[in-house]
Image (cartoon, rainbow, N blue to C red; front, side, top):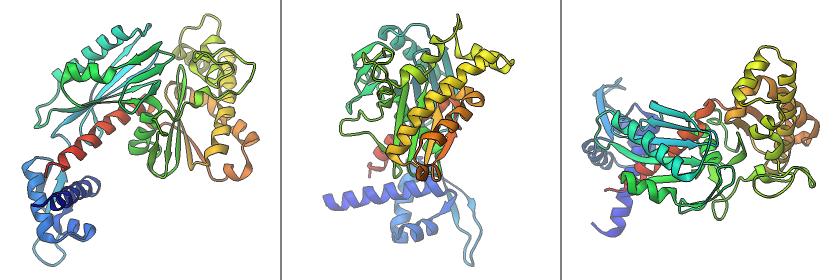
Length: 382
């Protein structure tokens, strides 16, 4: 087989696998029709995928006149992915099958974030999930980690101001520990991808995902593709200036959006309040002071969202991460601010939503990156 033939075969195999993943249950004849590939080519590639246990057959489907076709399915339990979301006050980890269904998880609240301590915690969480993993052909196909900071294309954490991390090679450390592929991604990018794949963004092409936690990050999906900028540093909109002479931010600048609209900003405004959860409980119980604090945060979130809508003209803005838990009290001031300040022709188009995945957007997003990478690599094995 020539080099060109090998490339064509790999591409065709990837196409067949993608069609089965997206359109299952599906027959060989349907794959041939949709893809335009010859029936014999489809049959040969399907046989390879069956041998590799990436797909499986089930009983005959409905007949359209001739012999009833054998139906093909994607084998979502032939391997598993691990996704982690490292926050300033929590670490969340999930194990998913290859379709993104959570089969196990671990969650820890953290008070301090020095890198050695977080690395040790991450290692023990991953090991714990692996110890309980169901038997499968491929086992753990990879590990994905979402970090609130600036990540380069090589997977190094250049700066995570709210974690107090600088020049951290998390990818290398985890690959040396577990000997599987590791993907490190900005947590807001991962959250955007998670919502696009499994959550609120499934029906939209241009999505802005706002990760509102201790800090604020933004994930940008343009025309169905994650936009990462020339070096992978896009989306640091928590650090756009909304007050030139404003409050000091963890990044070293003054007047950043996240200094006014984040969970950290909310907790700074409280009197001896130590958690978002307790504030939500107070608001639930009818405490007017707590409701007023959420309203203030909602207005500040709205100002930043206004700037983002005017800049990107997206189909949808999704608010996620921990502040989304306060949806009941922040959504009206956000909408009111957007209505009062966003250019009118944007307002008619944009859908403002809260995360459907709750606090799982980032963990599921990095897990989906891992699966996508595994599927690409396996499809190349022609």
